[in-house]
Length: 295
Length: 295
Image 1: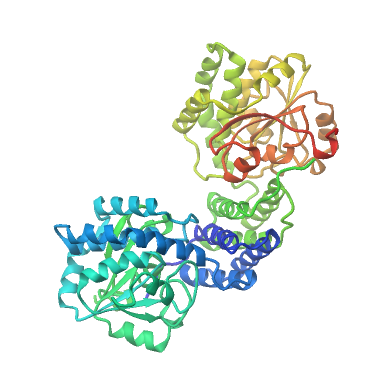
Image 2 (image 1 turned 90 degrees about the vertical axis):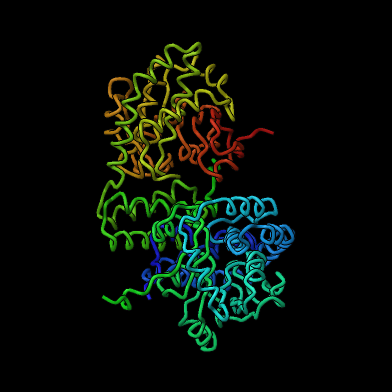
């Protein structure tokens, strides 16, 4: 696979994430400074050829260690889930009363992708999430592989759903409840950024809706070589994979036609790579890796 | 003096400047990566207690060395001056036909402060500068010490004018031509960021309007201990100092009542320090340094 490469423009964003994490951890000024400097030092030495989620993994690992806080985004995640749960009845109603419930549910799931402590630091409010949902429900798809996704959903016996962020989990639940298919919902095995863990999936009510499974590592995205052999087997056997968000796209953009990315474009680097503007609402079938293309 | 301290939020911005400088230098991808990494390494080690212009100085010094380009912003500066010169007749007319030409000229000078390769990377166009001028001419002053400045200008025998950026120089010229006072226009002794040098001042037509003087160093802002003894003498003897832009504010915010900052607030760090929102149009008299306050 040829995942998205880290762009020079990712570096200011990694540093911004370091500042945000230090602040969210509630560390004192000296500890914040120390943590950010450690992230800067790491970024000065890191292998720039890695894709962004792998570098973000290293950055947030250093931050958690330096801040002495295993989960700096805990309050951010809890607030996100809480805000999303307030909207849940309304989200469900929007889907069940829609002329095309699947299309509406896919858009709701993508609306939830606005929750992302990567590109922005602000804790999303109920009003933010409501506005994002209204926007995404009405927006034309910047990349529209929905018909292909619908066809695959009709024949797939089950779906592997790669979670992205806490709170977004609630929006994912609305889509999963619409699919009426067995879903394995894959979450991180430990905290990184505001990525969803098992706890966040259960807090969103997904414990009874899907089979919640850990990927076997605590890095953003899905870097398969870092995941457990159990998860790799599940990934390999999945007839259909729904990959939420930018980091999973960065890991899997060339993972082949079983994989569909559902996301909002939230930064210029992804916009240039995916070919859709910032703010774009995307349902994109992954292309085959170049080495697999038949000529 | 107690200048503005570097905030953690400055670090992502320094890194963004490094990426922009590398790109503007037209270096190849490997050289760009190398330069940005060198800036990251420096930032991981730099004395975080320094004010922002001193850290920016070190960052841009490393970048110029690593990129093998003594002036990565040269084309940016030339384009800025060129765009500003296209507006010059219109700027002059706006001032000479205004009911209060001094107030209009001060606002024109502040409008030119939109030209700043620090917080943004985009080369300003004539349309950008025209729109910025219209906005600043119409905006209420977020901090309004204009009456005090006017009074000081009535009694000052001459003015020391601390330049900020290339192109902004043209807007400064409009104010200087309105003052009808001898003006010493202080520029950097060498390139740093898009700060104005002697060449940029002359390109703006200031060679005949003011006495152009170099500050004796090539760092952003005015860190007096880094400047020449000649400039320090001029600074010490100046009856009135006009300090353009954020970096000069960062250096001189507490330099006492001789110093007036003319600027647009362009980042949240300055906004919090100065007490005006981003976008705010500011004419601010410097406060005395705390150790000089009489109780």
